[in-house]
Amino acid sequence: MEVEARSTGRSLRPEVTAALVFSTLVAWVVLLERMRGMDTGPGTDLGTLGWFVGVWVTMTAAMMLPSAAPMVLVYTKVAAGSSRRPRASTAAFLTGYLLAWVGYGLVAYGLFRLIRSLDPAFLGWNRQGPLVAGAAIAIAGVYQLTPLKRICLRHCRSPFHYVLHRWHAGLLGAVRMGLEHGAYCVGCCWGLMLVLFAVGVMSLVWMAVVAAIIFAEKVLPFGERLSKVFALALIVLGVWVAAAPARVPGLHQPGMHTMMSAAQ
Image (tube, rainbow, N blue to C red; front, side, top):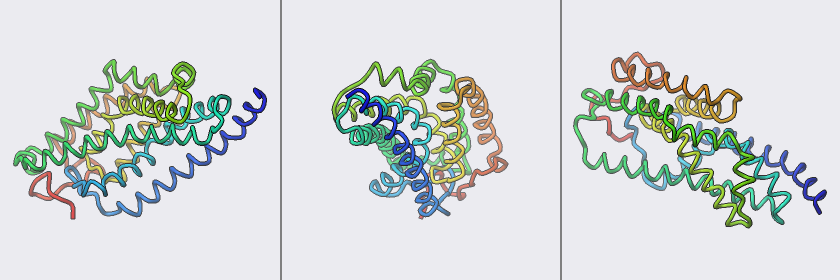
């Protein structure tokens, strides 16, 4: 039984790898198709709740699956030796992971709608909008240097330790593990995603930049050291956006009304 399980693990991992690569590519293609020309910069409207959730799940898959792949592959290997349905367990794990990010997206959407309902005039891009966007980016940079960031990043970079020591059997256990890992991932990356909201959540260019940063931090051998470099870069970017937003490459300038104007 043990030999059979290990053989299954070896044969299943290439299948899961191919599925992750395919899903990531499909997600990026869908984003390119649906979001081309939708970037209106900081304050881009998030649309209806249903539309936003669909785009958010697609965005999460495109940006997060590459950096989550090491954890998913380790989970797949262990599941092959301890679960009667390793494919279903892996799918359940990924479902829990994505649900954690859906929770983050729903909180962000709720805050966006709350702020928009208040319609604060100071958020206008011709008033204090650049300062607010710059401050959000700088806050994300400062968070990169906090102990909580380090704890969450080390969890994401240590898949063997988590899978072997926090194992939960069954499909519900797989969902639970996915949720737990997703919560750590949110703890690691919420600041970087805040940057995306600050510069324009519908910007394909900034999505690619943030996704590359997340991948570098979680997967590259020197990712922990890079997180400090990214911290400094984000703080500098925040000051740049606040002081001279028109000179920031790739930053779409909103209309001269309010930062929270709707994107039609």
